[in-house]
Image (cartoon, rainbow, N blue to C red):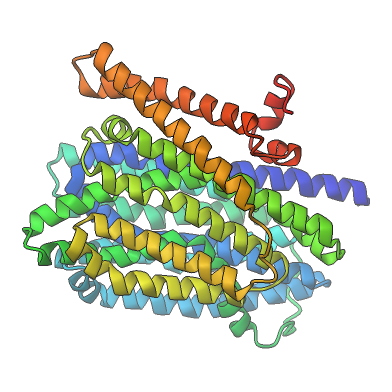
Length: 523
């Protein structure tokens, strides 16, 4: 294969994997809206209490470890040694997966009690089966990615999410029709995880059979492989699962914290179910910024390898500044239209302030992902690992106290404090590598732009609600959102052009903006 054809294969595969990842993440976020509408606040609470366990397992099998394994495969030249490496990782991961599976199976009762709800035990046991599939999903995805064949990962990723979402919604519909309780619905919904994982594994095996894979050389290619999996692979998993880890802390502390303030257990469940709506909105926001942030990794890594310091700095600056601006615009826009968005998606406009505050997690998570990208391109893992672990510890320490002081709003504030801790620690611990990525002048201009945008959006929403009256509240809210969003987007980009917020390079880096630049001249 010539260099040009190989480069074309890599670019095509990367594009396919990006599209598949976007589809999978979009499905993973969107299905929660009809699911919540079907099962109500308490049913959604049951599902979301256990979802972080599924999400962490999914992250390990789909994002973190496959990427790490692919890098190891690339470093090994001999195809038979590559297979030996894959099987060795598979054995190590299988041992770890069986341990996790047994802990979840036999410790489900203890975990459920720690979450202040012993009836969650069957839901935990249902999701635990997916961990047994993780080693095979992660290693084969990583192997094919290391061989620059992105199709198996892309196909299996889409198959997995389509099957999972279908099983969740169908089982929820069946359970409601048969008057199942929220815990039975949650158990059925979590059964979708091992079913979808098995379908993804079948997809990988079908692809594997069509490829004549070499036999294993049985050589021990890497020493201290277990330590590398835990440290380097673990760091990649932590970055991908940062929001899930904070949600897991909430699973153990929010209901207990609310109950301790004097609320009844059923009221605490209901409030937690409403609070969990914010995670859906944050995940939808991160679909866009995550795809944009990670797309620049190959170019950053290449610039680092070739020691092109100026190119590396320009890429890193553009990536952070553009995605930070987009994340800020989304968060401020969500906050401005929160009553209507909440009403449209979830049928009631409850806890608007709490959800709006939580949505600013999009901004801080984007900064963390952008920082990590710069460090990862330079093979620096320890800073990210330390920052995330300490940030999660902050959430664990302050969550209960802030809930006692501010109610459910305290949980949102604790999440922001945790993410801010992570971002600040990364900036301090890697001061040289992350220096001069942001521009204070640009940030000040963005603040002005966002204040004007938020004011215009809210005023337009209030005018629509006052002069265009529809009896159905959801339709009224939908009309307001459909008018408010275009006003916000147009206002944001017009003001950014007016105040010269972005350089020409940064304009071109904004997703989908290159097509717009053909129609609108940017000074």
